[in-house]
Image (cartoon, rainbow, N blue to C red; front, side):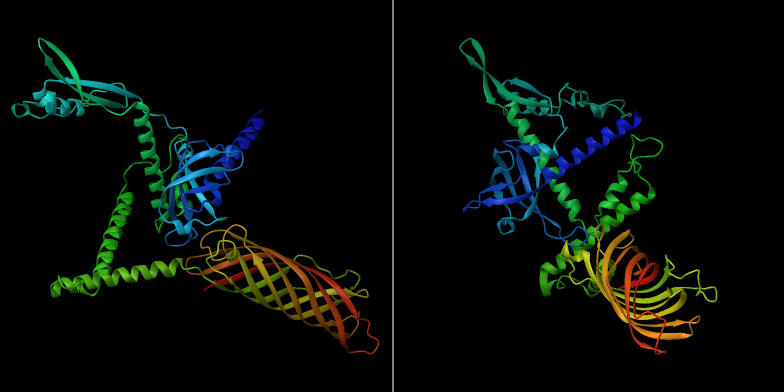
Amino acid sequence: MFFLRIFVLSLTLCFSVGEADALTEARLLQQSSSGLTAVFNLGSQDALKQGDYAIIVKQIKDLDTRDLRLIPVARAKNIKVNSDHSIWILFKIFDGELLTKGEKYNLLSESFMLKGRKDPSLGRLSIVNPKKLIKENTQMALSSDRDRLSKLKHQYDTMAETRSQIESPGVDAQLIDVEVWNKNGGDRHRSSLFKSVHKTEWTQQHRFSTFEKMVMSYIERVNDPDFNYDDFYEKQKKSKFAHEFAENTNYDSEYNRFLRNQSLKKTADAKLYRSLLEKGESWSEDFSDEELRSVLRQVSILQEKDRRDWIRVKPTQYMAALELGLPINDTQTEEDANYRREGLKSFAFDFEAVPVLGHKTLERFSLNATLRSNYSAFKSNGANADFNESSLSLGGNWYPFNPPYAFERPVFFLGAFLRTGQAQVESPSLNESANYTVLSFPGLRFGYKYLLKNNFGMRLSLSLETLKIDRYESSKLNSSLPDSANIVESKAGISLLYAF
């Protein structure tokens, strides 16, 4: 029963994630000639609601890039929803050049961002005053009359506050109507001076304001150069001892204060840098010699910090590795009682390059070349023969999860390659030797590598290939060594690598 519950919960989470992705990512299908009407590939099947508001966001750089990543493109309102597409009015366009047919966008909708939020409960309060007291009584009502008990506060000593001064009216917000007493003969009647908006209109304005604040906060957070999703989710991790609480609580530690001060200092430094750039060559005219010397020293420090940050996160395009290969299979035979080669191994120098950096898809592919010296053995006519190969291989790798330059993250890859070279074969039992050409296609490999921030790292790999050898020279006329053969070889490799 327990496993059944886990299975059902997993399915629910999968469907929930799928719905979230569908509501976020959208493709622009069509746009009107005026540019104010757009069709996206989201519809009722994606839980989209008619009349929904949204902010359309475009990702212009990869999230690993220390640059502007997300840009708001337009504010939009949905006017029609079909099963697989929807029509939107773009009532505020920030950057029309980013709207391109067929491109992908993040469509952040109000109903999705505010899902689960309760609308505020509203009350309505009518204030009826004589004309002379309208201003005073209205301000008192707006402040919930918090100063009623402090009119004579100068006559009393201040003590610790034991409870809030503001009484809760039982609602989240009060809509206030202001009225005034008028006289008509001997009768008094109320006349409206100010009337608040309808509750429905106020709620919609409040929801839209909250929605825009959430979207802007999200864009600012993602565009922060130091933002990282791994660190963000790490802070949300639940405590092992109390699962209802986050591990990173609101408790203000010395370390948190240090981080906050560093963040404030970075902001102040950025403002100084920006102000200097905005003034151009005349930026120093208001400084004395001592002040100018201090500012120049500070600017020099900022430039060095920026240079170090850039060098640390700049994607590395090349990688060199030294590899030790150890055989997984041994093709020698037990029939040869006179000789068996021990210590089978190979040494290789591998050079890898990423042709296209900065492209989200293409930077996951790399090209590599490998020089290898292979000391192996195989069976021939019931005897074991040493196989000493020198070869060159050319191939490519695909990195499905993380790019090849990622630091301090597990980087897995799949690859294929072509090998060509020469080999010398010698059989002590048969007392003869021969030279062969070597060809292997395709060879397959799978591996894992881990890079440190100092650009050094380690790589583990598994490879499988069939070496096709053809003899072109022999020490004997009627050699017992084969004219040609296929040698299936699988190896485990361990490499020390350096990225640059």
